[in-house]
Figure (cartoon, rainbow, N blue to C red):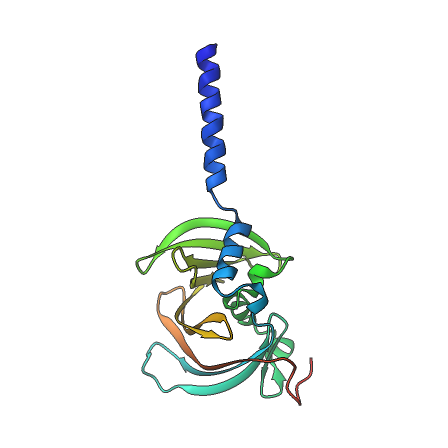
Length: 203
């Protein structure tokens, strides 16, 4: 009996230690947001100028576009709100690379199995509740920067990190279809945080 109790106690101690060492989804989300500059630095309303290349060739001819974004509800291209007019799903990708979806208290976060992506060790967070179907984002274990988003059978890889007013963001993204072939390349050329909605745009 004594041997059994000792073994049981040792198992309980080991389980407690293991549980204490394993970060929760909330822990990982906070660490990720802190590494990007902190929740107060996350952009809520901003304007970006970017080059977009559609297709498999990264050397293809880019088109330039300037958009104003207020994720997850609005994305204006010109005066047209793509979310309101088209229910543009890519707004949830933007909301996640800005880390807003991780910070939203309505989001349900869950850890997923670690992965090695392009030689980088990553941890993953699944976001549901505010995003349907659930989206999974993978972050570099060392830098805590976003590496990849998996959503709706597609993958989106992020790189070329830059900083604006204390906030770190990925300037480049490549989207891949389920076939593994790329289908778009984007590069943010200018990033501007806005204090108010520009004239001529309406929510």
